[in-house]
Amino acid sequence: MEPDTEVRARLADYCGRRGYRADTAADAISFAAMWHPKLSFTVLSLSGDRTDGIDGLRFLSEHACEAGLILTGGSHARVLSSAARLARARGLKLLGQLQQPYSVADFGAMLLMPVQTPDETTMGLPLQLSSELVSDRLHRGRIRPWFQPKIDLETLQPVGVEALARLEHPERGILPAGTFIRVAEESGLIFPLTEALVCHAFSAAARWRAGGLSLQLAVNISPLLLADERLPQTLVTWAETFRLKPAHVTLEVTENWDGNSSVDTLETLTRLRLQGFELSIDDFGTGRSNMTQLNDLPYSELKLDRCFVRNALVDEEAAAILQSNIRLGHQLQMRVVAEGIDNQRAWDLVSALGCNEGQGYFVARALEAEKLLDWVRRWNTTRGAH
Image (cartoon, rainbow, N blue to C red):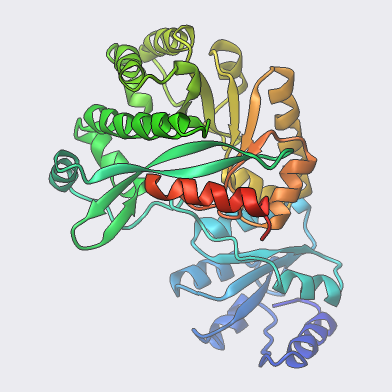
């Protein structure tokens, strides 16, 4: 849906020569009239003749459009990027954005881009389990950690794993944390659930170390537990049980505490650091964390959110902010880890910007503990060749 007739004609000709049936519309209103649910992809302009394109995004979302989406427009890059974030928030499969003027070659390259779909941590999964089922699965030992590898981006060596909660559903199979963690928090199950995950994760890490594989273990801690005075001693006890040093464990915390809990949180985090645990500020760069927390709390690692990394691939301003955050982490003598390395371009970007470690689907998805050693052997044999 380009306002320029000549541009629309060139794109239609390009697509037709590559086997696509190409239809053009001057704006979102015309597009709605010719809508077909089996589109392969659509090009939506934010500067149509009669609308600004936002109605088009809403229309595509309401009709559950599965087509790849390319956004274009002559507006400032930041405005185009905001529209791209809106598209992802509405569940659309964004291929990317093109700022006018652009060439047909730019358009062709965009068609080869991987789809930027919302992930389970940001879109709000439709499936939400009952507290009764979560409690049953917990007591039956059907909630366990899977492990996603982390790679040193300079040496390509596996250096760590993040323990990610998984629930074995009797009918739906293995479910991710987004389907049940909030239920556990709201129903008072988060402490026993975390303790069960810590027990399994510490046990696996100890076995790997005994076999000569020294991987830093990262465990997510709910902010609700940061004011719980039981947490530090519980973690120390399980580390001692499995002869695991606290320094071998990184506790990942997404900060959203406020009010009266802040003093208790500061006490807990300080105590954990004094006991030797590493602390990571998770999801950094998403707006849920701020500079004050970096200054006030004893973090040793800064973890960049996957959405922030993904945005930097298509937005020069986002890439500049990503670079400044990496530089900030290093200036504060913190290790910097990037999530969301889901393709070669993301790997190349965070490597070039000096990030220390990375994880994502391009490296590996989360694995069961029993499968990790085989993955490490394969990775070390190929050194990450894809």
